[in-house]
Length: 199
Image (cartoon, rainbow, N blue to C red; front, side):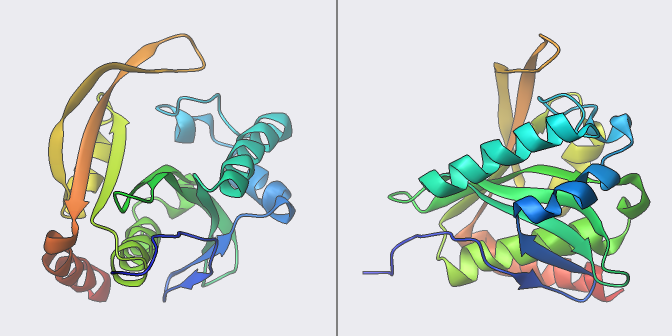
């Protein structure tokens, strides 16, 4: 029998980025990183640049973490120690050894850098190699072409569109594009990500 599938808050460190288990102490630095509302154009929640909105968002993740359904991280750039975003394991399915990487946002200053690629690399390594996941899924607003392209570059397979799947804070019901990566596909995806990160 493989060991139990039990994702927990754990520090994940790479060359460009450090994923620190999300704690309330991160609140001010997360708010500072979230000042551009465009970062949250496709989020289901309102923009997180207001402390009250960030607090609600963070408390939801921490509540899920206490219940065992989520694990949250603050995304810290190694070069200067700045918090530049956040990311989460969510929809943790223990029996079926699956989870989703989501709730991810990156401040504009760190977009199109190695930060997001390496953060995903660290999360995928942890999910497949440490936890023994069978499936990791990612999803995004159907209209978010940039996010869809970024997920595809991770080596994920597009599985289709879940129609009228999620209510946004502004009342719009979005269609959601679903992607996945399986344990058997991870070695090839990992090699491709390492090539990207070594460039």
